Every structure is written in C-alpha cells, then in structure tokens.
Image (spheres, rainbow, N blue to C red):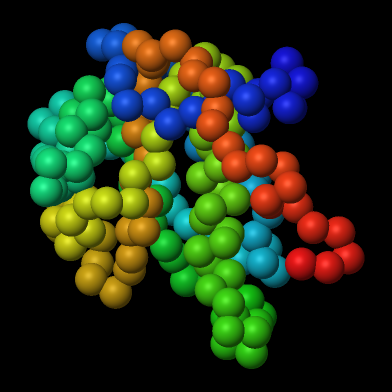
Length: 177
C-alpha cells in the first residue's frame, strides 16, 4: 500500500469487534512508534500497553467522564502514552524557543503507531479526554509524570469513512500566510 493510501484509510475508530490483537501486531505498532524521530533524539515517551481485562475496564471508566468516550471499553487494548523526561539539549531548546518539543515528539510517535496499526488492519483512536490522575494511579505512574494521550487499539467494526476535511485552499499557503 502506498503511503497516501494508508493515510487515507487511517481513521479514528470508535467501534471495535471482540477479536483479540495478535501480540506480533501489537509489538510491531510499538516498535514503529519507538523508531519515531524526536527533538535531539530525546525519545521522551513510554508506552504502557493495557490488555488485562479488569484493568483495561478501569482505564476505560477513567476515559468515560461526562458521557465521553464510551467506546473505549470495546477496545481490546488501550495504550497509555507517558510523557518522559527529555534530554538536556531538547529541554534547553524548549525553553529558548518556548515550544514543548516533548508533546510534538509524542504526537509524531503516536501517529506512527496509528499508521502502522492501519497498515496491519487494526483500528485506533487517540483519546485526550480522560481522568489523568486516575489513570496514573491505576498504572503506577508517579505524580510528576504526565499521560497526555491514550490510544485505543483493536479490530474495527466500522467501515472506512470518507474523510471530511477543509478545502485545500484553507490549509495551504506558499511563501505567505
């Protein structure tokens, strides 16, 4: 599959079948994320795979606040993306440039994970709305660290949808805004 085709089929999945994710596919997704570029090769991430049913359900409950993200319970795998320390050069650059490079880095890694999953016939959804403190307690992540993102992973029940995007002219400029 060509990359543009892969980008076209990757979508946020909110309906999962009961089929378990094969270990080799799961590890291939994590490995692809591990290979992601990062500012000064800082690699400020750790991926915590949650597939034990009782713990997964408790994590899903933490994501279902205010009626949001009820679909998370259907996913056979939830991956918590933990924001780790960056190396000194990246940290200094973040301060000087007033940019949180770590967040950019985990965004790239998460996207690579999701694209790899799509290439393997799996669906994903990046979830930012959840009770972070509850998830940290459940996973044994210390209070100093952040978990900015959960990713659901599994086989999709949903057909590939046509993407609705802004017109090209609204998102593109050349040499000027």
